[in-house]
Image 1 (cartoon, rainbow, N blue to C red):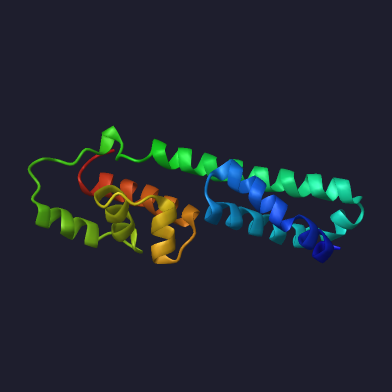
Image 2: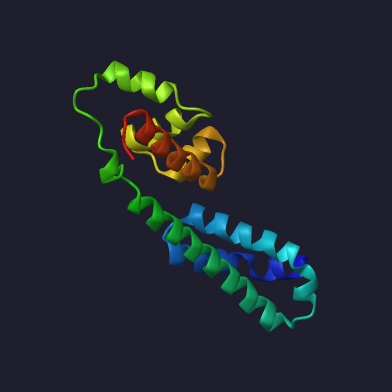
Length: 153
């Protein structure tokens, strides 16, 4: 069933998704994820007619795209360190390096890549082989640790 749907709708779905995203690689990734979800829901899809399956594939792909856009928007919201965490001017660069190095579990590396080098959580995740959610968690944790270390809230 899934194989038949894949052969019939894969190219169509990628083209539609490319128009949605404006990027062929992103479109292929989203469609690939939709096919993985289809495999996980093959029992439900087996109960649907072909028209319903096609609609399910398009809706699933669109929902994946919407989720991706939401994650990007959330990244942009936290792109700069919060106002409550402005670094004291009297600290030297070497002190900041030591401070970031003292953070646990790669938090310093993730923090530096995000706020000093300008990478987003997707790029950091790809570079460090970790999920975007883990990157965002480490950023949040690093900000909390740094606040405590520099006498903030």
